[in-house]
Length: 366
Image 1 (cartoon, rainbow, N blue to C red):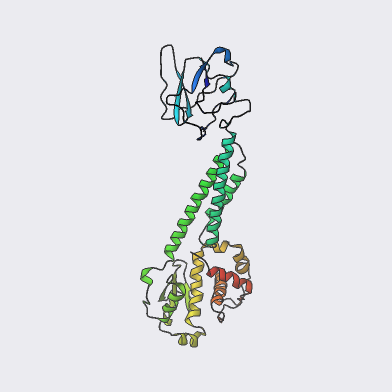
Image 2: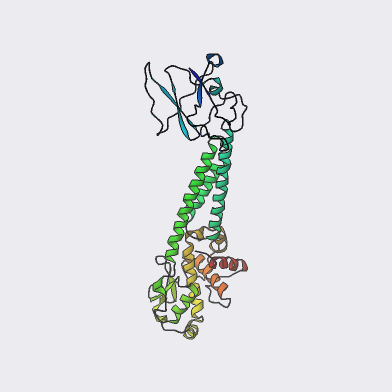
């Protein structure tokens, strides 16, 4: 027995050869089918087109009724999704399923709402590309806000990889799925980057135990003010070198270590001995804390590389060669805040371009 699609009242008539593509749904504007409507009706043999091969059996949904057995042999269940219902069409063993109007794939003409699936594919792709544009804008905004920030290598590599995927997606029926997968991948990468930001915010936050001048020194008063309580100060002997006044160590990135011998000095005392006041000394050291907040991304920044790394270390520089980029950039960051600062390392020149970049470093939003 052969069967043909029987549109409910108020639905347009499908074109010859039409069959529901994967994911097809009737137009919401169409009236609902009457209760118990028979979507598939037998067709007299004279109207059948036997030369068309029968379509492959649709894979049953997990909640679809199981095939029934009856007298005479196996029963095949054809499951079609129409108006939100599963329509099970029992067909006798060995019967040709569907007439030519549903088996041949169509003559190319369409009626409103009865597309071949190409329109649905195009609509899905357009929606996926809109989502892709949105996630690109979201990613760009994140990168602008956290210009240096953290180790966003994963975010950048995911962006590059997924951009290539979207560019090569094409326009076939699988393109929308490729773009949707790229969108999901980027959203996951953004979530990871935001988690990294949250971790660094915790490390460099204004913690309660730092409130108040615990040491009662001018040095801590200055550090609290210029850092917004994001850095703490300790007086100890952890800085290497007898002439080193203060330092920031990588294993404790938000702590400024100050030589114990400086504990009780006022601005006047410090200036008389070393030619600079506490504000200038702490600005330079807090600049190192800010550099630590930027993490490896600072060293990977092309502009930083050109301005501070790819610069020959002068013979007069007394520090470790590896610290040259950090020390000269910290000097320029200090001059941005206090133009009268003069105690730069030997060989450091803060050009207008370097000062402009140093100003951007201070403006880092964690």
